[in-house]
Length: 513
Image: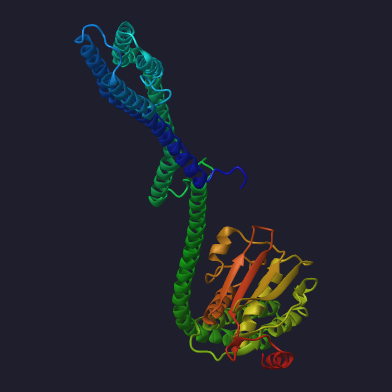
């Protein structure tokens, strides 16, 4: 990302500030140390000149004293020439010390006066060696004494004026040192502030946000404006929290759904046990009622022939028989609902069953004008009991056709989802509310348009699909928006692999169903 302030760049800025601070402090320290070193070296070198200058003065003084004891000065002899030669040697040693301690730009290191004086002494020694009269020799010796006496005085004057000469320099050095210390302090403060803003404050926000999310506040989101890896970490934490909330909501929904399914299964099991006993107990009285009604119908037809009451009585007896047979049909459904036990299952072409049931329902008179559309696609083999799955398809298609208008349609789609075959029944009928969806698979619950129905059809469908290891789900966006039933069944594995149904298998399953 262009212009992105990464932690690496921020650390480089911090390192650069540290280097600048170190450089400023080091430069200030080195300037002071080297200035002190040069001053000490200058003092040491000037101190080395003093013994030689003193020796030169003593030699001149000894020569003057020796000449003064002679009274009237004799001409220059060999002894005087020897003293002059010694003085020249000492003067050369002095000049060597001056050259050895030469330093530029350092206080008290200026030797220009000493060099001029040494040159004057050398000239005086030359004149002394060439002098012939006593007066001239005495004058030169006096001049030599004055010149050699001036040599130490130059150094004394420079030492006396040292504080005044270096005042500007050490003031500049002090100001520079304080400025360097202040700049270093400012840079260190800036480094501390940047470190807190770039590192510690984002870490504190991340830690506080993590603890807040960990405490259960999943709506909290960490916000960082650092535009670096810390901000990316905050975004990742927010994304993880959002994903966790989505997973949690989905798990809650699934738990609620599975809880309702468990409750429904318990209700179905309880109703099944009850229905088994009730159906067996009711079937016999219902058969007796039907037989008695049929017998009375025959006797009334023979006894009251030509009577007006005959038609009314026969009509009531026919109603009694019809309702008795209707009750018997309900008890048979209850027996089907409560029937338990292992049912033989085999690989079955599911699309063939759907096609056969749809073809049969197209010829039913009460469904005239309604259409059943089966989407094109490959057939799938499922491990089921063909008769029971045919009952599932029949119930779902009949319910869908009953819920649509006379010109409505029902669409059936078969596809594969992993190791499952999914059959979807979609209609454009009356739809369902949320309350109806919650109680849809409960026994004796019905919302048919005709007002008829036992409410056992979908319960039986649910039990059959569950017994086959599958799932059935219903969905609707509300009233008058249609509904979708989705049945998932395990695909039959032939040789360890799920298999698609072939033409021979479809024909075989159609004949078996």
